Image (cartoon, rainbow, N blue to C red):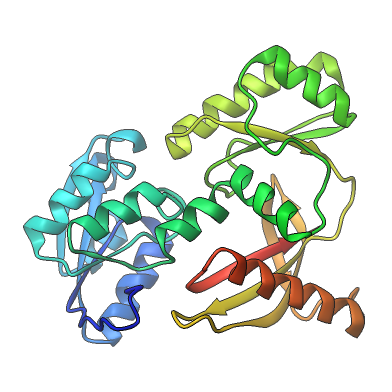
Length: 286
């Protein structure tokens, strides 16, 4: 996907900067479209399905994600060596990394995803909270910025009121997230969340927000183009979760009436337009 409306590029070979089922799905779709594919793998993934399915495959490092799937330099080196026109990041890993999207652009490679400015605004949850506050979108009480020290974080949590949720500022998928019921549990949970976020996303920043007990988790799917157009494709009910991961998604939600559905859809589209989003995205509501 290119983000200059006046520039149209033909993509003939895609490097899939991920592993597992998402890499397999991207590779299969590219094959259906007649686009060649390049897989990357760490040492334990040498014989993984995505490696065997792709047209080409390259080793990018050892087991640790920080030295393989999170290594911008190694992935771009493979893109150059293989002659890939584009990089598809899948989800997780570098998919919400604005610096990676910018590095692809500098290297003359299409980043299949939103512009780096939108990733920075919305992929970083602290930046997104600040942007949504400015846009008047309701949010759970919490810190707008990442909290660094144990005492600063503990004071913020006490001000918000327990229970609180510690969340990674970067990435998603439930990584770097801890529910804390009382002050006695806070410091150990805070440090554990930071370590997990650093390992998963290469970014250990976390923020704190009020934990809402037994909420409804509703997601609106949005699509936006390079000309300012944006639409939503209605909602998914995602309230059934285990370890912060969705187990069942149902559409439409049985708890929304038409008025609330319309308001939430308008807010989702406004959120996309506020940051110049391009492509497919999800706006989550509690």
